[in-house]
Every structure is written in structure tokens, then in C-alpha cells.
Length: 126
Image (cartoon, rainbow, N blue to C red; front, side, top):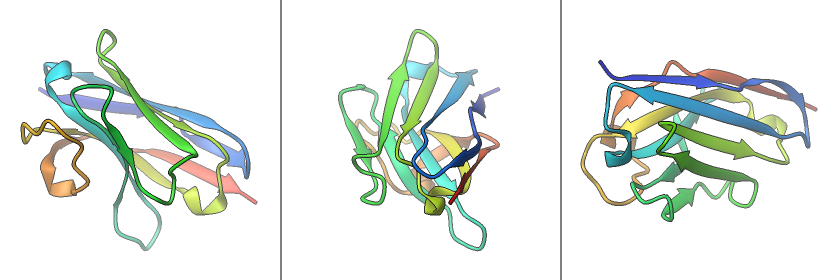
């Protein structure tokens, strides 16, 4: 049974940093591209950042580029999202997901991801 468990969310002030973690089990971690998505109240879930099977290939949404960084540690079956210079508009539930489509690249579409975590709340106050 595949499980993805996010942690590291919380309440911070604008300009602060947070690092989210997502621990995976029940899958051969190195065989999966991984992504972070977020969903703010009243909005659709959106792509934040992704990392391919090769940790050298990453991509992030324009709204977070230069502030957020995704990385993976295959030895720990964990993917991270380092979030710096947080803004109130970054407030959302953050989800990690595993891409089971077999792609070698980062996918931005939710439908490519077959496994999802339960999410962790990030709230940025002004």
C-alpha cells in the first residue's frame, strides 16, 4: 500500500521560511517523479514544484520560482519543498504526489499523479 505523509506545515509570518517533507512508503521511490501541489480556499489545486526521477531535473510554477526549491533524497524515500520569502498568497494546503505515469520528466498536470498525501496546512500571515 502506497503512503505519502507530509509534514512541516504551520503558521508563519510573511518573509519567513518553511521546509515541507513528504515521506513515502510502499513504492520503489527512485522510480517515481514527485510533485508538490497546493490548494487555497475556494481555488483549484495547482502545481507548485516537481522533481523528476533524476533529482537534477526540477521545475516550479512561475509564482514560486526563485523562492521555492524541491529536492529528493532517495535513501530516505523523502521529497522536500524548501519555501523561502513566504507571502500571504502562499497560504494553502500543500500536497505531495507521486507520478505513476512512468514519465522521465516533471509533469505539471494533476492527472499524471496517481498517489497523493493527505496534505499539510501552510498559513502565512501579513
